[in-house]
Amino acid sequence: ISNPPFYQHERSVLAKDSQRNMARATETLSYFDLFHSAERLITETGLFHLIIPVESEKDILSAAYLNKIFPVKICRISPRAGKPENRLLLSFSKTEKELEMTNLTIRKEGKEYHDYTPEFVGLLKDYLIIF
Image (cartoon, rainbow, N blue to C red; front, side, top):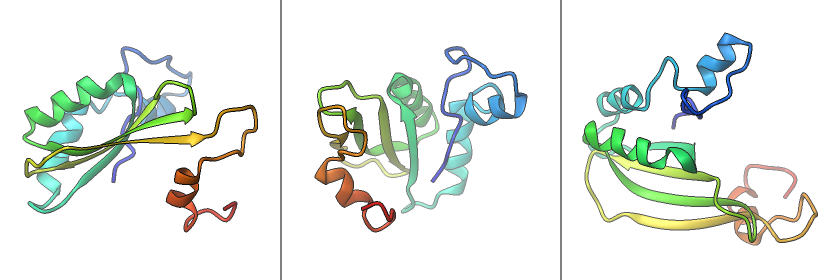
């Protein structure tokens, strides 16, 4: 599981703190380099998991294919019912398999911040005490 640079350097608004930029943007770790390392580190049956902004999907998939790593799961995340997807959960493997596509909505429609969908609660109830 990786918490990679989340924003592409060219598209992100950089903070004044260079350490924060290094952690959040692809300025010093490109997606290609990330997958190059993943290819070396995961086993033939291992998986590599990422969460990324929707805008980075094409670049991430391109970097994966160039390093011979294949998407096996893509979950499109919407922050609230009726809102567009803004994040992707991705799983990759060295073995090409049928791609599993799913969707997850975090919050129900409306203004209540903690009005989570049953699917989101089910996913995280074993990990968060608020559920």
